[in-house]
Image: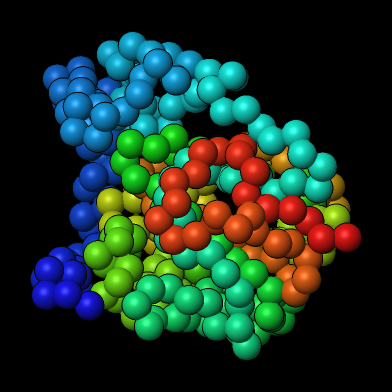
Length: 285
């Protein structure tokens, strides 16, 4: 890792990560126009947010910064792939990594990896994905922050795993070992036509909340031990392209599939920008 990456990452070990995130949550939910309007306008200017894609293009119409950040898009803004057996991108963002889960190891960056067991919180959950494939997508502040289903699935289990709140930008990902398995995260396991699919919503510094469509806000609260929900009776089935959750501030989503179940498109590689709904892979038959 570079000196610059070290200088970015090292202070984060000392920061009161959850406290800072809680403070920012209060700011981003403020409905005071003197607070939320300048904040929204600065983010649009700094990151070049394209408001023409939003269902509500007028920034001042959002009740809070958080409402702006999790804004809906126009129905025609992100066409869903119509290819047969398609796997669709679950988000706007940039691919951090994509590839094989080799002997339970998931590549992070620059010689760093973490285990599927650590990421998912148990060896039993991870066993379904051994020698399968994964893809990690990073959402920056300019991106659409709702998450949608890459493949139709029926929810089996959700797990809220406590952890740190390191930044998930490129510099920190390169510098902090096992970053995605150290940060607080919400794991959703779905049954699909090709077997289990895991969607891991990874929290980060200043990510004030993660929520799902079937549960609502999962975090906060900050917790000390993992908690889980099982969905045997009346388990929700969510179709490909439908919303499944959102980040209240930017972060990362990781997808996992089992061995010989899905193959990624050849161009799905580190550094590639993706848009919600576009074709990123195919189910294998």
